[in-house]
Length: 157
Image (cartoon, rainbow, N blue to C red; front, top):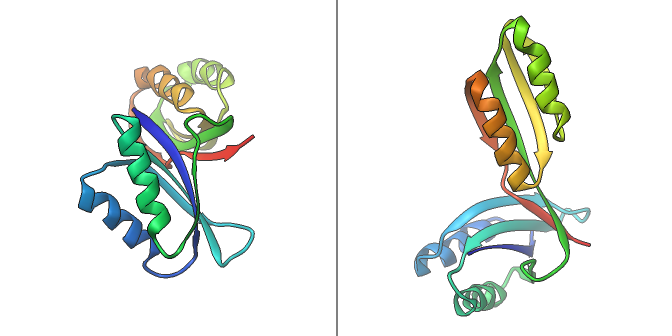
C-alpha cells in the first residue's frame, strides 16, 4: 500500500541524501518525492509517497526518519484528513479539427493549454492522482509526445 508522508527538515546540505540513504539501506522504495523550502528558508518540507506492505513497515519508516538529526517532524497522512495534488506538463499533438475535442477534455479537469506551437500543445494540470491518470488516458488518443510529473504534495486540513 502507498502512504503519503511529510517531513519537516532543516534546510542543510546532505539532508535529502541521508533520507534517501535510509530508504535504500533498508530496501524501501520511494514512489514519489517532492521537496521545497517553507516560508522559513532554514526549513524544507519534504513530501514522499512510500510503499509499505503493512503497519509494522510504515512504523519502522517513521521511527527511522525521526532518528535523523535534521528531521523536525514526521507526519503520516494515511489516516489524516488532507489534500494532495500532483502537477503534470504534457505535450500532445493535435490537428485543427481536434482542438474542440481537446478543449472539451481539459474543461473536465483542472487543466489548461499553456503553450501552442503549430500542431503541438503543452498542457498543465494540477489535480489528485486518480484524476491525473484519467486525464492522461483521455489525452492518449491524441498522441502524448512527452510527459513530466512532479511528486505528490500534501497538506493537512
